[in-house]
Structures are given as structure tokens and as C-alpha cells.
Amino acid sequence: MDRELTYRLPFARLKRLGRNSGRKAHPLIWGARWILLVSFFAALWLVTLFADAVERWQASVGLPQPTVLVAIILAAAIAVLFLRRAASRQTQTRADFDAEIKLRRDDGGLRIATEEIEYYLKWPGIGQMFMEPDGVVVSHGNLFFLVPDSAFESAAERNGFIRDVYGRLGADARSRSEDSMRVVLDAAAAPTGV
Image 1 (tube, rainbow, N blue to C red):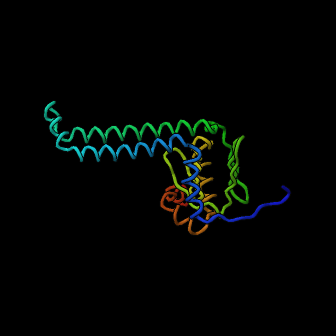
Image 2: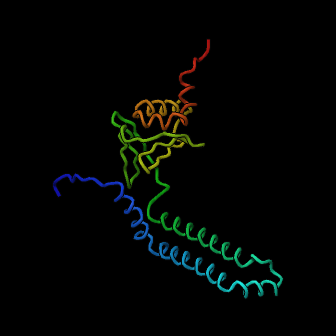
Image 3: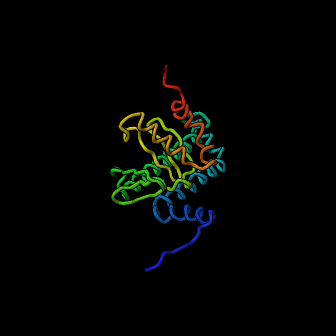
């Protein structure tokens, strides 16, 4: 193809894509979640339908009244945790999450790249910055990029990066970011001593 494609995707379509991509990318996990949901409500319905028999059985073996209900809820919670771990393990097989990341700042924005993928966040596209205990995060929509403190040679270099990026944000992004960035911004504005 020798031409550049130009198109728009409305937010409603992206929401549908999010739902569909999970189903198509992880069909076994998606199916297991539906089976779990149906099984959970079927078990609750059966316990309700046969409540007298369940209560008599619990009493005959010396179990407190809500034991079967608690067991169903506990089994469902364990199954949900298992499915989340399985989905996470499956996702980890699809990309190298331990790859070295290179971040470069230029006049147009931030370039974040690995050997396999590259993102370029233009300054007007950065929607928010905030601090995490181990670094600073820049975001665009639902994409979040953590730049760990360990990537910088010093706290002064990190704070300079934060001030530079914050200074290039649009007014809305600044207002969303200000509370989280205030400590760094105030430290830069404070007098250094007499």
C-alpha cells in the first residue's frame, strides 16, 4: 500500500472493541468466566430451591446454617482469582514485558520504544501525569507509561524531567496533574537558601 490511511474511531466503537478483543484474544478464559457465572447463579438457585433439605443436611452433620452458601461464594472467589492468574499468564506469553525500554524527549513529545513496539506521545496528547511510589506516570487515554525512578541518574534529573513535561502539558492535563505533581513543582520553586 503506497498511501497513508486516515480514519476516526468513535469512543463507542472502541468500547465494543475492548469487549470483543478480550473474547477473541482469550477465548478459553472468556468461556470459563461465563461458565463460572452461570454455575454460581445455578448453585445459588439450587440452594434456594432446596433450602429445607440443605438446612436439614447441615444440621445433621453439625454445620452452621450458612455453610453451603459461604462455600459457594468462597469457591466462586477462588475460581475468579484462578481465572485472573490464568489470563495474566496467557498475556505474558504474548509480549516481552521484561524488554529494555528507551524513552526520548524531543520538541514534539515523548518517544517510548522497545525492540518490538514504539509509542510517540505528542505533548497535546498527554492527558495526565501522576506520581507512583517508584516513579512518574504519563498517560494518554487508557494508556499509562511508568518511568521508574531508577531510569534517572538522580532525583534532580527526575524532577527536571517532571517539570519539563508538566510545563508542556495543556491546561486540562495540568489541572488533572497538579495535585500529584505539586511536591516536585513546589520544590523547584522554593529558594535554595541564603
